[in-house]
Amino acid sequence: MTSSVVVEADGGSRGNPGPAGYGAVVYDADHATVLAERREFLGVATNNVAEYRGLIAGLEAAAELGAESVAVRMDSKLVIEQMSGRWKVKHPAMIPLADRARRLVAGFTRVSFTWIPRERNAHADRLANEAMDDATVVQEVRAAESREQRVSATGPADPVVAVGAERALPSWIDEARDADAAAKADRSGPGWTGAAGRPTRLLLLRHGQTELSLQRRYSGRGNPPLTSLGRAQAARAAKMLAVKGGIAAVVSSPLGRARETADAAAAALDVPVKVLDGLTETDFGAWEGLTFLEAAQRDPQLHARWLGDPAISAPGGESFDQVRERVEAVRRDLIGLYPGANVVVVSHVTPIKTMLQLALGVGPSMLYRLHLDLASLSIAEFYPDGESSVRLVNDTSYL
Image 1 (cartoon, one colour):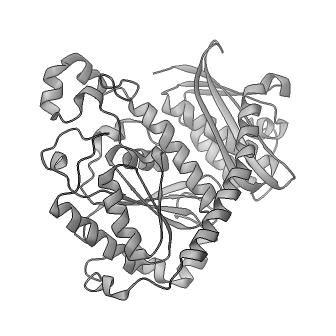
Image 2: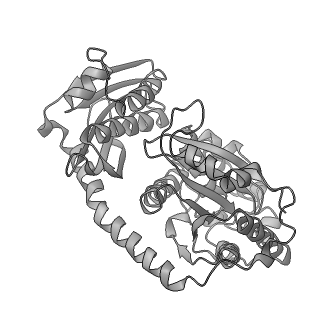
């Protein structure tokens, strides 16, 4: 835990409004060590929206670090004066962002706001510009995908895959079919969040059973295939998704067990699979293939520390903090590539838990407490104004 931190944040748009992005950096209290960085391309937005989003990202990062006292420094006079309470927030686009920032502020013991000149905010400014630089890449990839989908489109998926899949379907399927509900989603999000706009909805599907998962062994970068039951689980999940419809893309971890599961879903939906390396499971290093007890006996002290500290990695492996960094990059890319769309994300326990953690805005303890079944479905939504929500966790009703 870091008791006191400094948050510096910035945002900008090339045109006002125009392609926008934010950057945020968290330092230790001495302003000597960088503890966290955040950046994100936002699409088309104003400078002020981007600046508020940078502040929010910085506060969220400080909360994740366990900070109690935060010194916020920004070169935005507007944000600093409004958050200090000296200026009123009048613009409709700013009100929900300011409210969200205030909710985050309430979670700390002490928060101060200080204006600094732009030259003293160079790190956050650089991150914001790097985020805006991502716009070209995002647009090029989106255009390429659109061309690919037009070329590969051969009509709707075979309705035969949906036979029997109406049984025990989750309520969000009815919502997706309802055009009126879709129209409402463009105006407002979940009741208590104040989120606005239509979210990018990530349908987080865990892969089916393998021999290692059956034996409850650490299964990271190893590549065990699906068992016969695992293939049946993937097929049932695919049928359920085909009934849902309205899915723009299927993305997958590169590991075989996830690809098998993703291929089944993509075939049912008649869309291609995009492989994203950031969705790979944690590298468990020397613990790969061991049971929990075997790993604890092999490295008792390290294993105990690993269970409570996301910065600790298995011997020769990867920490949960490192997983979070790449999963967060995937989340940013998916929001940029598929704004307001439904995307099936086929991955593993840790990346899916991490995506849910990001949507809930909670600390790393969730990684150790949340259970996800094989071939289960969870749903996280990320809104254009930066809000997020979790709509479903660990659904297995279709299996």
